[in-house]
Length: 218
Ligand SMILES: N[C@@H](CCC(=O)N[C@@H](CS)C(=O)NCC(=O)O)C(=O)O
Image 1: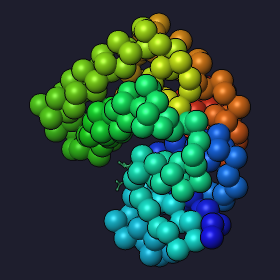
Image 2: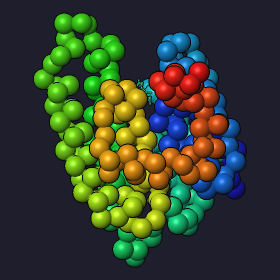
Image 3: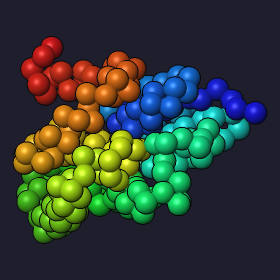
């Protein structure tokens, strides 16, 4: 029996909201304000004692890790064309880029963002942050190579791997001001004009306000 789906937190929770919108699954978003101090949010800490977002509650199921949550939803409420089946020629690229979006792109950017915001002034410029940026750039090279031969990251059609990678590219734009070339910008124009993306943005007020602030549209 399916339960009521509750998504805790925006941030990478945007990936999950976008997927839920694309799949047409009902859910509610429960805000988690990390800046206000997650230690004060006892209800959320009972869901994720480690205190990071996003988390998903679906009936008795409790999960963290945005990519794992996406795989759970696609398997639990699938099959769905957003997740190519193992016998689909797009399957290998799908799996690879679904995970690379976090492990090779957004994850390394996290280290740079934390350094820029939280590290003592004298420690902001350091070898590890430069290394993390090099990792991001090298994986981005694989993304660009793929996108020069196909409109979407796993091939001809939009999949959940595009949600993973699009989020990562926008995260890098918004946090470290990473400047992308025409291939990536054309790709972002394709993925972020989808109705599912717009609906997710409407459901995620903190993300929407952040983007508006960055683009001066307040
Ligand atoms: N690999 C995790 C990363 C989660 C993550 O870094 N979340 C950020 C916000 S988007 C966060 O909660 N940071 C605070 C912390 O990690 O304590 C995922 O994909 O869900």
